[in-house]
Image (cartoon, rainbow, N blue to C red; front, side):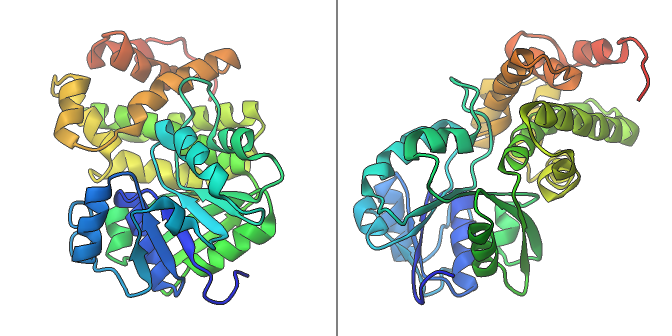
Length: 334
């Protein structure tokens, strides 16, 4: 267990990083929250809240906003990274010189690195070495609901079972439950692919295709997710859990999902750029669609739904054309 009073540093003060910082603090952990935007951090420190993303979620006394990264990490052994996938490498490289020998790293980042096709744990291993304790936090969680303290469950997978268990213990409370896993790869694949499929679900609903189409997309999307994960070395059981099916269903069916809202906007005839501007937050599924397409191709994994979403985003195929291509595929056993 962490030493008595030992803080955890949360790097990334967006909606998800702030929500996780709040949950750790509510469960009794000392928390230091930092990020890139110093002006925003100073405002958060003054307001004792993140008014932009999590209104009405006041910071408890044991959550401190710290703009200076070196001060934030001073004397801290556990660090949680909560940045988009395209910023993970830069963030890890920035904190690497500041880490002590006993520092343990976890992240709530979802998605393959676009330039390399690597998952977050592979990027972290490259930068920090394979011997350091590492973990990933994932599962069906909307930041707003975690910020509000609504009942939530998620998965924590680590390369050391003890680390996963300690994080789960210090994060869990009367309205938050964390389960543990040893399959970091599977948990990360689930978190990456579900964002792509959620864009597809938004497109389907935006076109008015109904509940039958939505559930077919979710179910067959789960097959694609599992197929890719197993090809990369994950356990198929992982995709039946919170970080697989759970996160997929949540993201595909609720309009709190930025990826689903992207799909709805595309179905309405908006461009990716216009939809992104309207949503005003990073839509991970857009970059993930390209990364998943390339990783699947490199590993000879058939992912027709993800392929069509990629074609819509990057090749100018209309949503209705993509649906026609899927429905016209040769029949096969399930």
